Length: 480
Image (tube, rainbow, N blue to C red; front, top):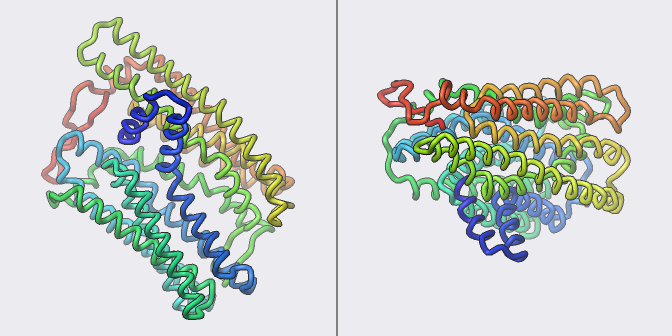
């Protein structure tokens, strides 16, 4: 994320209200811009293509397709991102950028194979059991695989700090998707649900192609070391598990409520709980600004303190190291406190606005009953994830793994128990999971601060250390 940091520091250095707003807008564009573009495009399609006029059964299958496309494309691509990100950053640090392109190809291939197998199995069920039109199945599968390729490529674009090109690719791809959708309905008279999912398939594939071209333009050399990244999965398996628990923990409470009385089954294939899923989506977006605030604060304040501490280890005297350590942890506490204070204001304000607006668009009842607990749950969760990022800085991966594992298992067990409670408490299991993970993460940071010398001088290394040689390649552990 250093590329964001450089740009944000340049903006915030001017120290005016306008520049601060500009910096926040830049961070928002980078972090949640693509997601907002997708939502805006979807609503525009609904508006221009006459979504309200199509049959209820068609609405159900379209909504279920979109839901499954996003959830399962993320679940199949996100778990390995932390390991791959570590591999990319190490190769850039070692000036071995020729190893990144083969890693990219390996990542794409792995994601296509794993996601493709899961998608094909589900599509076969759609056709043989659900009787869904094969052309619709093909379009929905294409949209799913296109999004898989997009998620896999975004990680590499982030590594080369071309954040604006991510938003640009999304803007172009989704604009073309909108044109395709409108053209299919207005010019060729194709039904709305098929047009929307086909348009998204085209848009996602164009975005994936654009991101692929950016990666290829930046990384031109190829060492053909396609298997090198597998060594990192062996060494950094804790990162894989940490990201897996966190990713699946985001949706495990939804999966639990898909088995309740709120369950609907579409085409004998899609299982969901629309009321709970909608409340989850709204709660997530109410708190999405947490990530924007976190990026701004970490990249403009904490990162400098962290670098100062690392530099003091390489040549500073004892007092300088102690002072740098004190400033670094003071920065962590200040940033977390600031994020919590600001996000509480945002969350409460947006929540009450949402409660007022939802009835105006015919959304209410159970959704507004479920929403408050889930809103608090996502607020706590995003703070917990911020703490995991801080733990990553100190390479104490066991604590990060325990944090996400506690979150996952408590959220799962708690959600199972809360299924029989009143609707206002449906999200309590998820909230308890997030709070349990947050508590352990806070304890972990306290322990790291108290025993930092041990983690640095006894368990870590100050200089680069060769820890394994495999596949004809040296693997480095670049710790503090």
